[in-house]
Length: 441
Image (cartoon, rainbow, N blue to C red; front, top):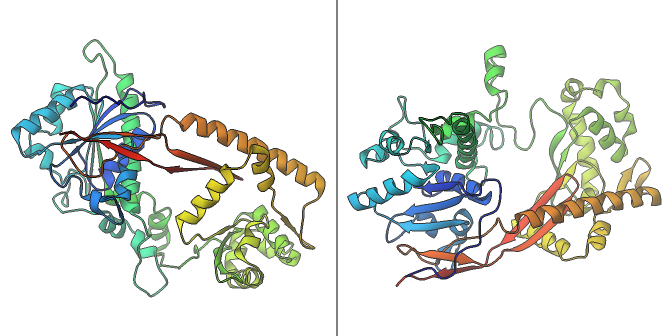
């Protein structure tokens, strides 16, 4: 069947980049999705029948996981049994014309199918091959099965999550896989830069590379000062709940409505503004609290002072106070609804909606008229920038998903409903896909 409704041309900085994705579940597909979000053309290879296992994970809509639809946006699917010689030949043909190949099988699987870098780069010396696995393609653990949750433990993250003395807890999302994916994308972009720099008569498209990413190494790379603290001082950081040991004040504080406000006042000038905001100018002026070391020495006292202030106010009052505090959202849908409501207003209304109240040492009161006008002007600039950013991504975000895995299922999606909310420190784009599948007989 010929696809009579082709997707619109890709837009973005990676437009024209051809990617073949052989991964499944999270790490490999997230990396390919990130490339697709910025314009790359991605062909996803799935096993016939059930397809990618992620299709049936968590909540299903019309028989397909909504998570899978997010993970597979901007992609086209092709069903191939990689154990069969005919399917392997198809992959070789695709790889010969591709710029990037992404896979996250256990090390040795690709070589067993005759699809290792030796074969693929021989046919296409410009190919960049991203390989994501639990422990890397070499080393004593290479043959062990690796999953993101295990990598989070091996990399040190699970040691830190949770309350002191209690069972380590999950972050709540597949952070180990995601970190590895983002490291992989960075590696792909560096390899593409190397390819551009090695164009020659012998290599007219430049030389490709193999990017080898281990899940646990990606997590370990984000462990900040854990290793040098142990190396220099023999200190082993322990779980500390919602606090960040050695940096103060930053914690989760109970509010009058039963929610929590996440307050961060750990910069010197930020701390002084925070103390003025909670009505404690004495602490703002205390020379022993002027630097982080002094605040860490008195962190219990600071937590008590901030906790007393938050306990008398609702979470929404903290958000309007101008302090470095934020609501802890129980559901992403709540934030999405706020963004949709905000985006539905005219630009002038959106700017006015962004002008909350500012806290000052005498108590919570509306900011002065001049301050309010300046803030409105700033928010109008943010709203205009947000709209410009939204327009720039309009043609970039398309979701290609199908209600059931079918060989050679081509999918077209309508423009996503867009909502862009101006924030004080950035922009949040909320995307809601509307998916339709073209069925192959």
